[in-house]
Image (cartoon, rainbow, N blue to C red; front, side, top):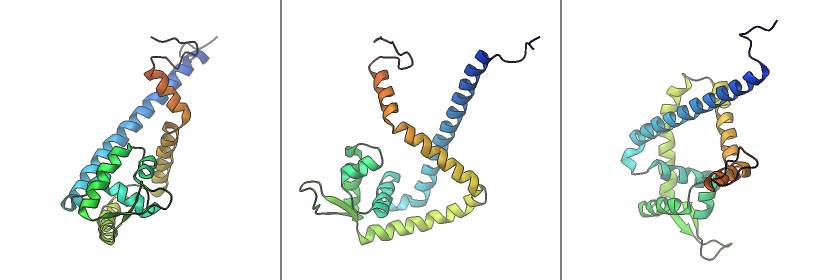
Length: 184
C-alpha cells in the first residue's frame, strides 16, 4: 500500500522545480543586497576620489586587459557603449585615462590608464585590501570560490544564445515554454 505522505513521481517534479526557483530567487536577492552593500562600502572608501563604481570597473578592466576601445569595454562588461562612453569621458576629464591611436581602427581610439590613473587604482586597491582582510575572517575560501563558480555559471547562462532567444520570444509576446505558442 502506498503511503499518502510519499510524493508521487508527478508531484516531485513540480516540487523540485519550485525549490530550485526559490533557491535561485534567494541567491539573486542575496547577490543584489550584497551588491548594494558593496556599493555603499565602495562609496565610503573612495567617495573623496570622485570615482564612481562604474569608473572603477572601467579602470580595473583596462588595467587587467590593456588598452581597449569603448565598444570593447562595453562588450566585456555587458553594458551599452553610451554608458561606457559617459564614464570614459569623466575619467578623461579627471586625467585617469587617455586616448591613444588605434592601429586597427581610424576612428575608435584606444583608452588606456594614465600614470595618475594607475596610481589612483593602486591606492584604491590598497584601501580595498583593508576591507578584504576583515571579510577573510568571516568566510572560508572554499565557500567563497563555490560562490564565484555559481555566479559565473549564472553569468554564462544569461549571456548564452538560448537565454537571448528566450527573452526575444517573451518580448515578441510568445510563451517560450509552449513549443506551439502563438502571439498573445
